[in-house]
Image (cartoon, rainbow, N blue to C red; front, side, top):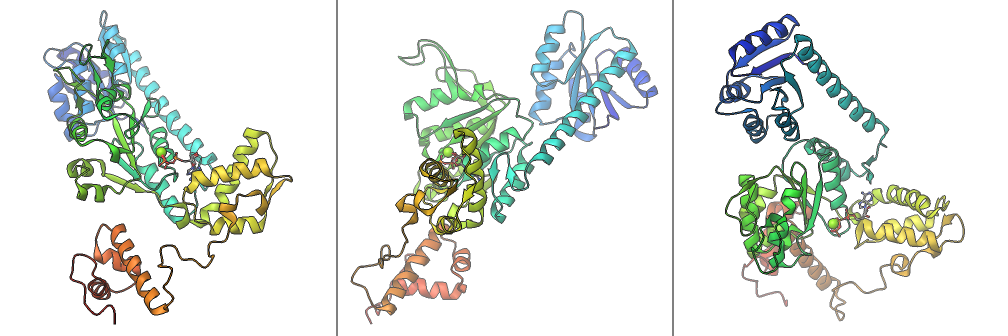
Length: 465
Ligand SMILES: Nc1ncnc2c1ncn2[C@@H]1O[C@H](COP(=O)(O)OP(=O)(O)OP(=O)(O)O)[C@@H](O)[C@H]1O
Ligand SMILES: [Mg+2]
């Protein structure tokens, strides 16, 4: 980054003039504001690379200015200028997001040096990021493996959203890597140096979840012998990962929504609210659209969480990822177990690729690890895998099909109906999308729905022939 435009904020006009002169002579474009409000106004209208801001000013002081910037999500670098006696405040300001500080009085050189230093640090930061990106494998992203189009698309979105405070909702069946993706978003973003706090909304009793999230003051309830900082505050400046958010009880959903909208929380038993700066990533295995329809999940919260939606497909929908994942897990567990497994036989690979993986990637990893321990040679063979995985699927029985049904015509109707219901479920009742999934025309779908009595329409009475 090259620093070119600077805004000086100081209530002493002399200081502003002096800095304008010194910095202008060094080739910077300098503007100044005599107070925080004026400065914010300026930042809203013009691009600025660095703000040089006095700590002590009447009305809006340096700290309040920093906070206002944060609120407006302005990410211009701020360097504080602090007179003797306000150094502590300057350090405090750095904790609040200021980039650096210089102490007054200073020589012109010191300001120029601080600016050069900032420029250098920004450059290094960017180069490091660049190097890091280059060493990563083409198909691996923060240890998340996937070459399927869907996974590659997900990685691209993760990369894009990482640096912003946007709320992300991650959905997908169990074991597909939701938490991994959440971590990637956190650790690739600007919040990486701040904590990522994980809370499993389904794993904490309803009555404790509120104080767990928002904290409580001493005496707020019988067991509250001392006050407790909630997870929101623990995650301040970083990310709060709300796992299984679909399990959150309704009353708490209201409070969560308020926290997201206002950017502030209220600990249990406390009257005041506290400002927090937390990025929310939520995950769920539940279909939240359905949950909204059933009234178990608030619609307004759903929209608030669903700003960016990442849907991780089940493993069975991306078999092309399986060989890569297997290779990845073999390497991972070779290292961990001190083994030297070289690979997997073609026959075993084929079998694993055609298995349905109800437990998704987690199950695949467990199965590989187990096979590695079981194996006698340095190549994993079909025999090293558990029967549930290697047993061929079709034993003649079709899952769910009435046992006495042999008529191809009837069985086809049965299957059609099942598929239509499944497609409608998947698309939340959207018929246009369902027709696409089913690979039939929209009118054909409507006709069949009427025929099978799906979707609240009256069934036709001739289904028995
Ligand atoms: N694409 C992937 N590449 C490498 N490892 C993966 C990938 N996806 C999942 N895993 C592994 O699978 C396991 C499960 O991942 P994770 O815990 O992120 O899943 P999840 O979707 O949060 O599951 P659940 O809904 O059960 O909580 C982890 O051990 C992780 O290492
Ligand atoms: Mg999880």
